[in-house]
Image 1 (tube, one colour):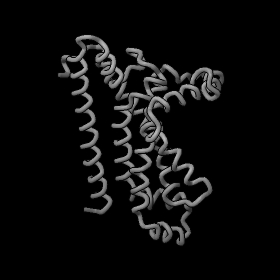
Image 2 (image 1 turned 45 degrees about the horizontal axis):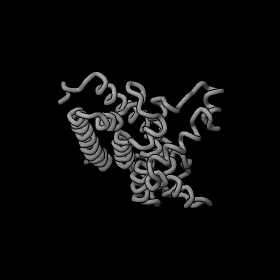
Image 3 (image 1 turned 135 degrees about the vertical axis):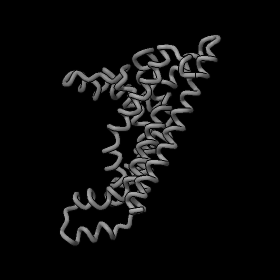
Image 4 (image 1 turned 120 degrees about the vertical axis):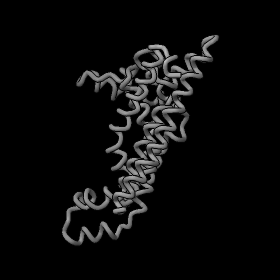
Length: 232
């Protein structure tokens, strides 16, 4: 199966892995912060933040991609600022694909981490605070180790979701072979060509293998971390 992939198809696979890894790594710190805020803090606008976080799950991916295009494109306010001041261009670049993947995967990451934070007894954090430990230190030494399995699961789940992202990505960065063509985009491109079913099927098998590997890794790492924390 893998030997049958062409050089262009291998580029699509490796680009997908690169995009997913970058998307997961860059969104993880924000995901931990947002998940903890939603689980522990009461503040004005909390429900609005929760709605915005989960909005990509409800909106059609094409709509999300269009919103990214008008915001981070060369003519968008944020896109113009990034281009003029930092020379960063996201639209129709692989970095834009990473941004689209991060946005689409972010709700799943936050949800997984938030459920783990909510499962931690707040009294453990309160006990550390009564001993005079700063809030940040309490989070780093008490909360973070306890929610680590959820963080790992959320990160791997986000990675798998980013690998399968299609609608927002193709709308924001198009489908340029060797530059923005990810694995789902390559499958779509093959299906548009007469006789491309065999190439599409090979890439589908690759996608299934990667997705299953990510899910199995998530389960294994989460259980390993949980056993280590419990001392077993």
